[in-house]
Amino acid sequence: MRHASGYLDAASSEPLHPAARETLLAALERGYADPRRLHGPGRDARLLLDNARGVVAECLGVRPDEVTFTSSGTDAVHRGLLGLRRRSDTPVSHTAVEHSAVLHAVRWADAAATSVPVDRTGRVDPSGFAGAVGVVAVQAANHEVGTVQPVDAVADAAGGVPVFVDACASMGRLPLPAGGDVLAGSAHKWGGPAGVGVLVVRKGALWTNPFPGDDRVDERATGFENVPAALAAAAALRAVAEERDEVAARQRALVDLVREAAGAIADVEVVGDPADRLPHLVTFSCLYVDGEAVVTELDRRGYGVASGSACTASTLAPSHVLEAMGVLTHGNVRVSLTRDTTAADVDGFLAVLPDVVREIRARVGL
Image: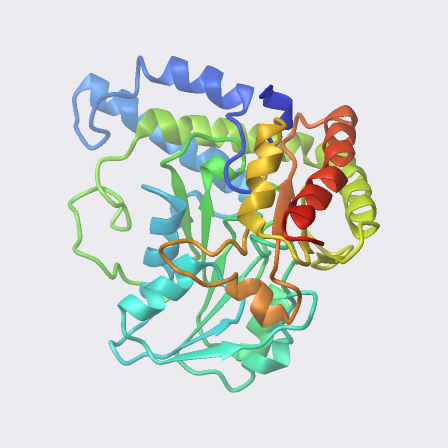
């Protein structure tokens, strides 16, 4: 039987934070008007939008005028990265484990690209960006295995080359890196509503809108802002920032249990850095097992997880992240805890996991 406590895919989308739900419902009554209009409802909406921007800026440690709300985290990534390219022939150097949103943006722009390799934990060596030209792209933390990247050291090694940071997986969960000229985040990753991205363009960054412009007050804006959703995203971010230390400590302890139990299963490899990582995420790969089969069987038992190595009809390829790390790509499972995941939830998951792996292997005669 399916149960909400079995949802272990917060890295895809965290359930809506209570603070976001409460704020969203209240803001729907006041934030409907166009915030650039001068009439009362418009001024009211503008006040809400400015408040949301101010809260997000305070939580991230940046200036309010450096924050723009976009239509999604993916949109923020695309705008953030492509806006740093000063010319159509500007090359991009990126880690080999960047999110597909970064790779798709590079391909769309037909930019010359250099992929900088990572070690078996998924971490890049900053020296790989020494002598980089054009633009550098480095994630704050990996979305599949949780490994934190040395963003500040990469920025130093790049020697003044503009740096784009995809912080979608870490924003709200870890402090924002000091390095990086432009950063991107995604509200539904921290418990805000879906459809709200955050684009941070630091003061002095040589960034221009890479897409057709709009006549909004904020030149970086992507159209009519969803004011209620932006305010709800800000409320969730503030709540998450306030409870971050307590939640992270609890999640790290539970993730350590998953790492230990999964690693005790025969022919299972736990991947990613064991310590310098996102607090809520753990990934492991099972030899002789199909990732989609594991996800399906766990779902039948009431546990929702993800697989980064499933061969899908659209790609027919394993995870480029795991391949770049040189680790096992078969039967990959990503478990990511929500803020409400309990020890009992994790114990229940670990009780069924060995049987699921064993049953799937038995089907192929192992």
